[in-house]
Length: 246
Image 1 (tube, rainbow, N blue to C red):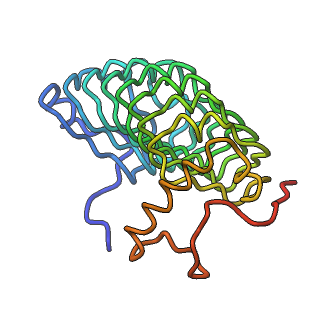
Image 2: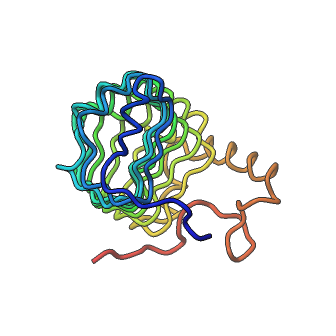
């Protein structure tokens, strides 16, 4: 579909004129040079989308962003950010955080202050570790960390009793904590393809049997959807042979 609106490099003046009346701001697919501290004028903003702007760390004023106390959705996908800083913890109403397809190297521990977070998408980044404080995001239902460089995940994720979907495909995982299988009592989708562990390894973990019951129950109800892998069989969530990561 042909784009029918102009590409902007600065936040349009009209946005600041609307000010506190603004609830949704979608600036995706532009060429913003920066997203300034003036954003704190939008005190009632609930949804902010900055995806696909090529923004770098220094071009986003996180201090201003942290003043948006009513923000529930923040989309930062397809930019060039290398970190999510401590100010993320100020967004106490945030329910959805999506920052896929960036160059993320670091996620601040303060992300654990997001007690209302339900969906976290950090796929296709450069993460080698996750902050243990993620275990404090007690309402988290879905998390996608696929296509990173993770070698382990914190056992504290086992505290996420509402978690239903956890995607860790295409990382460098060599082990998996029992605590996640035992503690995430609503987990029904766990995807670990393209890691340095096998389905045989997972079957030996404490808590796997209980998880397997939930997973198969979901599968039996959704045969018409994508729970079947490309071979038409039941996808057990991991590879039968070990992958090697160079």
